[in-house]
Picture 1: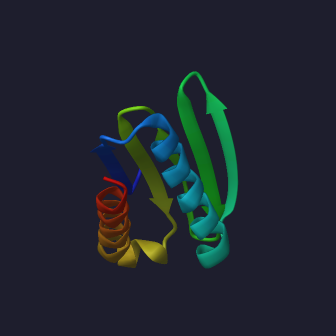
Picture 2: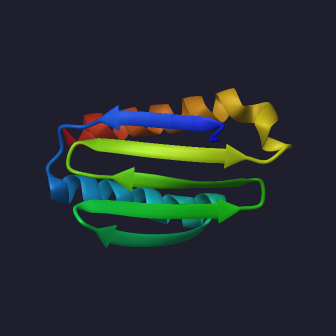
Length: 98
């Protein structure tokens, strides 16, 4: 079960949605030290990510972003701040691309 679950519809075209997923992957690797893998299958991009204390998956399709994050013991204390930051970043990106 995920500690943080975000499900957000979007109005982007497929290329924009995929581009946003790629931006997130680069930021996760460069800024947060995540080990990421990316795959595209049947109209859905999937990014899996992991680092000490956190792991999860981001799924992007033509209409939605879905993110599930499991936090380790130490990061659970910051669950609210992490969830707020992810939501805020997604909101900003969606506004920028709209």
